[in-house]
Length: 72
Image 1 (tube, one colour):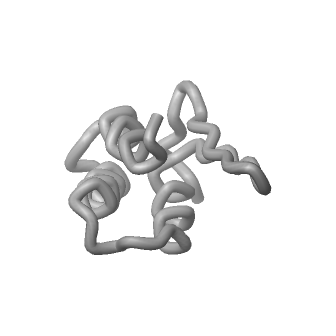
Image 2 (cartoon, rainbow, N blue to C red):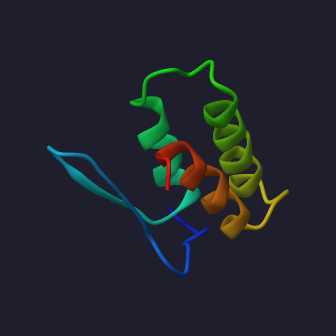
C-alpha cells in the first residue's frame, strides 16, 4: 500500500516513453530499471526514497532526490 504520496507527481520522459512517479515506493521501482546504479545521484535518490518509506525523511525530500536523477 502506498502511503507516502507526493503532492505533485514527477513526470519522467524520454523520446519513447513517459512515466508518472507519484511516491517514493514508485520511485524505487523506477530506479531499479535505471542504468548507472553506482552514480552518486542514483545512490542518493535510493537512500532518500528508502528513508521516506521507513519514515525517517519527508516524502517530498525524496522527490527532490529523484528529480536530480532525472536531470530536471
